Every structure is written in structure tokens, then in C-alpha cells.
Image (cartoon, rainbow, N blue to C red):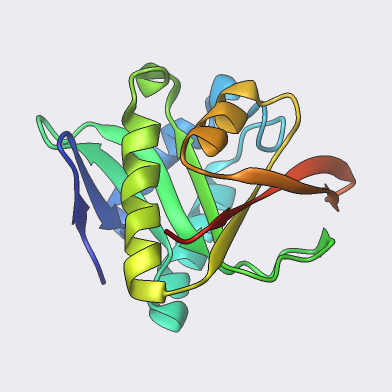
Length: 171
């Protein structure tokens, strides 16, 4: 499993040791408002963590936990994913996903982590493109996606809601 480093961040594959930080993040209504509109119980967080641990084992890639180099504070996560989402239209390329704790939003941490994950995907996966989905009202994530090269290609339906589907060609 791959560890990525940037100027300020360390991206490590998710680990059981991240559980408490993940519980705090997924209980935060500011963090979850655009993702699912509600927090997660510790049990749900545990199941997500197990899914992400298994994703690394099955696929050789997945979610990284983002931590500050200086002090190790938990920032959030970024990942290259294949979740087989029940999405219409379905994804046909690796998915990039990210989420940063409210305390670190607006500080460039998400852009730094997403850029590192994309550089890794371009070099290691050698996929011609990656995709992501973002709700139309999540303006900060849409701006970040555009900043790192994503462009709208379709409107989709996921879990009864409408999402913007974006794609980025490998560089």
C-alpha cells in the first residue's frame, strides 16, 4: 500500500487506528451536509472503514487518510475508488473522492491532497480518465474539482438525488 507525501500532508491508506477520527468527522453535520445530509453512527463508520480496508486489499488502491505532517492532526480523506455505485449513468472509470474536516476547509489541504492522489492515479493506474460526483449545491467541491482539471459531462442520479458527474483526463 502506498503512502503519499506533499509539502504539508501525509496520505496513508486508511487504518483501524483512524476509527476515532473518522467517527468525529462523520458525526459532524457541516462535513456531511453535501455528502448524505446526515451523520453516521459509530457502527456505520466501522462498516465504511472495513469497506475501505478491503478496497485496498482487493484493488490495490483506495482511500488515504490525510494528516498534517506537523503534529499529525487528522484532516480528512481522499481516494481512488471502485465502489460499484448504483449510479445512473454508471461510472466507467476510477472514481476520485475526497472530504476534509471543516477545520481544514479553505486552507488548501483538499487541493494538495487531491492533486497528490491524481498524480498517483495518472502515474500508477495509467487510466485515461478519472471521474467524480458532486451535488450541485456543493460549490466548494465543484470549484476544487474544476481547479484540478475536472469538467462536467453529465447529470446523474444516485440514491434518489441528482449529482453532477465530472471527468478529468490524465495528464
